Length: 417
Image (cartoon, rainbow, N blue to C red):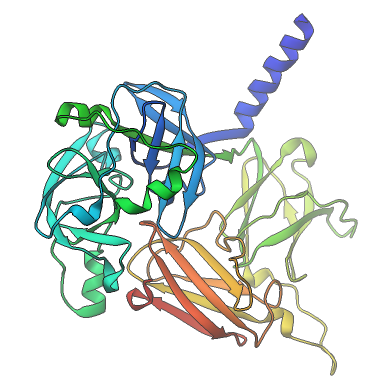
């Protein structure tokens, strides 16, 4: 038994060296029953490895009960007996110009984790392009407010804080700077997600109760840490599936060092110094998902070395009359939405679902370009739907796009769904 405990302790120490838990995003949520059921925004928790709810300086593990990306809502559950929870009121009973309040934890990296209150009125009963899921409010909201309760004068929830209109993106799109245009999701979309966990009748009577019923959400992701060794950095523009080392000029490449994983563009992969002979020379080869290879010859290896692969390391292909250049075809997505893009999806128009996020751990800042490689998983001259999702959870979609090699597809604010 003692031996088992020692081995387990060594396992925990090794795991802590290899993996790091970092904060991915923060947001707001609120209790809707007396047994730890919480409503928040779906985009707050998207892509998270671990979700925590912070109450009085203690973090509680949260599990996702239900999620709807279309309405941008999610239901969480923690093992906690909360003293206060909100009543969900009917948004349709509210009127244009009604006073509203928003509670949340905006810009926590700057302002800290104290709860903040803003107020305003209902400015419109719909969202962008008259979207009926949303309504417009004049209460200021910032990143971190997402998922927070929008309250009427009776401290009842009539909506969930969702997003604000990006001033600079709108300036570039229509030539004017919008003034305090913010949106919430109507309360009527909450209850369908609570079918197995019915909401309570509410017991929030004042602002102090409302504070106790509103919670700070912290989303973590687990990343592999680098250990002393050699860092292979992929800046080829493509996802790499294989990594090989060979003693210089021996042409004995051995096994793939990536194993089941892949190395996405702009990512680094660490090779332990124990697996290579330091101060020796190696040939190093990457192979991307299309079978194209990138090789560096006669590289002198030393500790904590960064070896950067770019497109200029692409190995030439033999040319013949029958050679096909379809493997080198690609198309480019240009982000001119005004926002940083966190997710990108490409799906055949015949498909009813989106494929996996092609950005992976990458993001696509405004003004930058991302290369999508053909033909796998795409086929040249087929039609696809393409969707981007930004840091606010808003989506931008182009439908029925005819893909041809080396084309550029530009997304702007006009593509906002």
